[in-house]
Image (cartoon, rainbow, N blue to C red):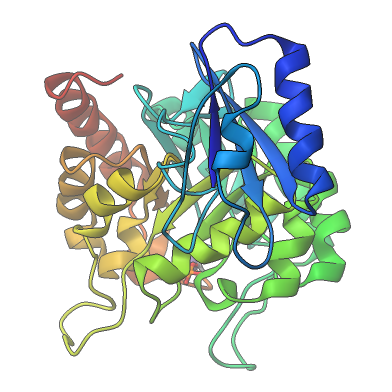
Length: 336
Ligand code: PEP
Ligand code: MN
């Protein structure tokens, strides 16, 4: 349930509502709108009848939130939330482009890529140091050494770092180096990990699971928000279907559906979504036209030598072309 305060309700009136709700055994979260404050009532079981709060001073109305995700839903927070990243507010109307290699492979490889993507217009650098690989014999990432290289790249370019964390106990270590913690598709329902990043100071990029519904993605985001971390971005990265010509099937539908259901920014990963570099730009353009708030794109200066995901990595020149195309599409739909 949400308790909508009247426009101009005083702090004292808001506090009285919060205390009353908490006395009834529920947790509260405040959502500050431009005109009014909303008190979100959270907890197990069914909240009390709204009428008992409607008699309090300064309350305009109460409304039940029927969806299973609460803090994540537009019912609770009608206005778009934004996540700060390198001076840009990701979400309406800004579009953010994050780029970099799938994995950090060496200092030279990462620094070369970091400078190239910055030059092309990326606002953040991606790169995995801890890699979730299908085979235990595949390159598993450089671990902390990779994180140190990412930190050096940030120092040189000023680009914030987006990097994956795979286990709850690694959140403090990865969080020391990262600006944005990526939760990979395979870990979307690792609830202990979601709780751990919910307590982190870093922003979070939550990727949709390979076989997950939109509702499951939103329930996972709910774990992070309910832990207290408001800086969450969702990432559509393709789902598994019967189609074999592409690695995954980019669910373009998910973009407008998510924008309707939630206030959280939505980022598209066309690289994993399609899995072949030749199609990445087309899918990326479609995602921006469909309303995505940003892209995360794999870029490698020598894709044929990449230790992971070379087949879907753009060379820096191709990435630079894509950024120009995205600028044109963004402008045509009234975004920056
Ligand atoms: C990645 O970003 O390199 C990655 C492993 O992504 P996903 O979790 O979406 O497969
Ligand atoms: Mn990858």
